[in-house]
Image (cartoon, rainbow, N blue to C red; front, side, top):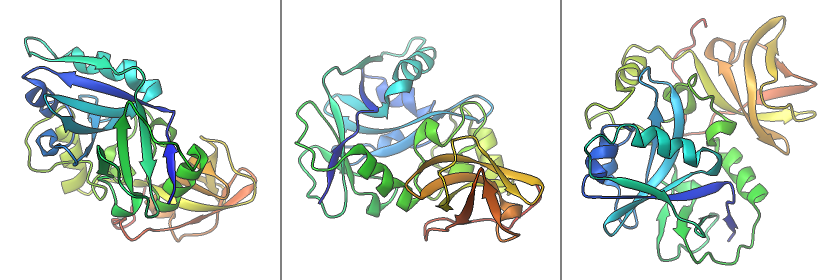
Length: 271
């Protein structure tokens, strides 16, 4: 029943009476669904619909708590607060708080929320009083990779990645009913016109683990690139047209795509 502290995460708070309306017009998911015991996974996009950051949020009294990538926390606050204008809202980091994750049957403590992406992912908790972990961040990373879940900037590229390439639709990171938000037009067009030509796909790595960004080759053709990985498992961004079309080589390794039950692939098309 493993529990790990995720030291690469930071906790931010959003306060002020306009906090919900403020975020609702900026991020990809419906923030009004956040509640005590219920988290929302969402993303901030460029006006052109390209990924900048993603995070979890939940409600805690008269504030929202954000579980964000620590390396992106300052950027995320700066980007969001640029749009504050006259909104009565403030953001600040919560020093001394930690993010923990539990999985594999670990009992969910007070203040935790089920991971909104997949039931199998377990739970997450933002807290100033973390429990003593009995697993490592590497253990959690292996669990995440086994489920095929993307991990922020390790698997996506700022100002280039599109949400639907990374499974945000199937993993409940996008609301199709809430109305306008920044980048919504391209996200909707990508879905309804079937414009996805690449996907972030879980892979088994046979051989040495390739570094992030290593090209994936199919014969003489470059068909994608490696993203995050660990101990024989990883995620690779691959052209749909390459799936099932022949062996995939990356650095000195061979990649074998896996397709988790949650993943819904469109028909392959040239890219």
